[in-house]
Length: 269
Image 1 (cartoon, one colour):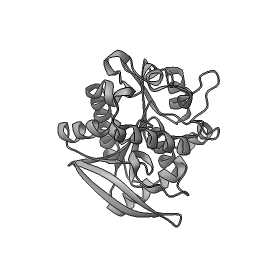
Image 2 (cartoon, one colour):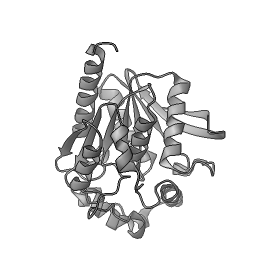
Image 3 (spheres, helix red, strand yellow):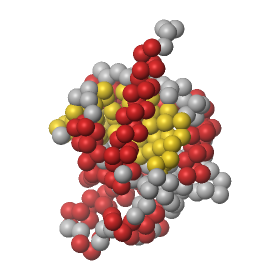
Image 4 (tube, one colour):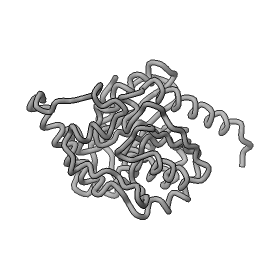
């Protein structure tokens, strides 16, 4: 996997963006959640190796110890940054895949209506408000408590924070601080209504055992997007790319291939 740094400008703000790039073929932009870039890196490699796919996996500025300009502070700003990346690389028919807050960013990208984006796939996304089905308050939870909400089988993925190296502790603290800046309360009260303006094909994937944002929340996310498809992943929690990567890969690839074929066969306007 090649790691490159791109110099971009968004609304007059200069940004240094770190991007992992692997594979060749149809382009996927893979947007990580609050767990940081390492939570999607193995899945990016798997997708690039198992399918004819080029996978771009950027690090949201501020995560992983990367620099973040003070003005870059919202999912909408990240969406604008990633549209600028697609423009710089002159990419077309890109499939956006976003997990957790990465799904929120992907939603904002879809609302920007870049012609370079072909479809979006939201994986246990956050961002909308659903009465009686709130996003878990991740900032009030210890890591073990958050892990318990994030996995179908949390024992299998248990992490002991006391075993962290100093570098791992610093990385985790940086990720948490960046998530607080971008996510805040992890919702935008306007997002659910704005999603009616998404005009590209959308797939919403949800882990049936997700207790950070439950399945009812996921269904509401899909219902807010015109003609979105909603699929539940069995024996899976909030981070399918870690817990059930083979099933996630199959769902992402099958949908993207189907949507790309449909777009190619559609009559020109």
